[in-house]
Length: 150
Image (cartoon, rainbow, N blue to C red):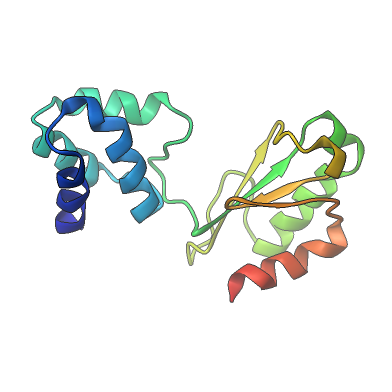
């Protein structure tokens, strides 16, 4: 892990203003920001660990807990909620055997509820990674899980 993090830091140079970009790349690689990685970034950039930690905890895009390779975001915005998104979320919880906010033990999936993904006309909407899946019903959840398990 240390070698890969050093490679990421080297890509940006030693500019302390690159911390956010570096953290994004580290998270992309590891699917979360473990403390050892934050310490390594701080050391490589010669910035206080407290600065790196404050950025990692300030932005919701960063996670200090392991996330799945396939992050599942179920939209619970108004249009999605009205069209049954809560039932879709509950079906994902049963199918993955995790609760909202958790990551599967094999770290294949993490499950989160979001308020709006901006695709109201496709409600209810689920995002798996960057892929948008519209007009999802509870009956379609098992198929989505199977598709990403491969």
